[in-house]
Image (cartoon, helix red, strand yellow):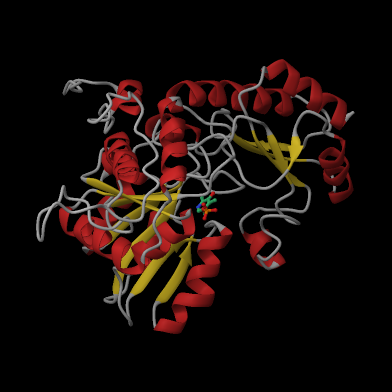
Length: 383
Ligand SMILES: *Cc1c(COP(=O)(O)O)cnc(C)c1O
């Protein structure tokens, strides 16, 4: 089986890095649940010595995701946070990083509560305004860490312009692409150096695994990530690697339905008298709808909406029947969250206000159910 050079996205998802098992012909890469490998004689082995360093199931996933994101190489980690942590080991004491102000809460916690202890400095900037990024650059700046669209207010950063700013300043552009998935947005094509994902979300897609991946566009970064993956050891397990591989095979068809359902729910909510405002990049009312059309191949399954008060938000969250009230996103089942009291409770109220995250905001991760069933559920919950 040889993947043609011209292979398109959904074909790459299914076939890249997937060779039939050489010993049996099994079409699916087996779960190599082993800690070590027997060597034929001293100094003679098949390239596999110890499973923190080498595992065929993990390698198959890493090759698959490197191709899906269009990078040189990919390295799989035990969680999205472990993947982000591995990227920060490219920095040293005294270095400065510019970060999207409304970044994932766990990323903020790692940067603010852990890495500042090691002399790293972080500036939180609205990266949708690149003049603010340029103003924040210092001689010690080494990295621009961007999330687009952001959680939960769906603000976008122009990736091509961010890459141009990073290139001029000779700093790395890192993009957390978890929310969009590579099906909708491929940051390396816009000039990003590194792409990181929580595979927990759309890549695995079935709410049954925690994992992370870093995809590198540059060979020197790939070499370091391979080194740190082995040195620090926060590897993805063989079973989780296999689950994510199973997930990426259906990424394109799942995302197509996530797009349809996200759009259907956003349009329904925008026309509902009890809804004040809907945030979804696929709506013409989104302030960055044109950028979304340029940069994304679809608008995804994530949307937020505002009702009149916290009481109303609470009532909606407690009244949904088909949708589940839960953190996380990107699975086949639709989830609802109240960011101010759940995912973003640790963000100080004044910061929440700055980014437009009010107590009356509700977030939906649209799954792939029939959209009419989701609309019916929202209708009864709002009614
Ligand atoms: C979930 C998430 C993470 C963290 O990933 P884990 O797998 O939970 O460690 C990082 N970034 C974004 C955007 C996320 O949604």
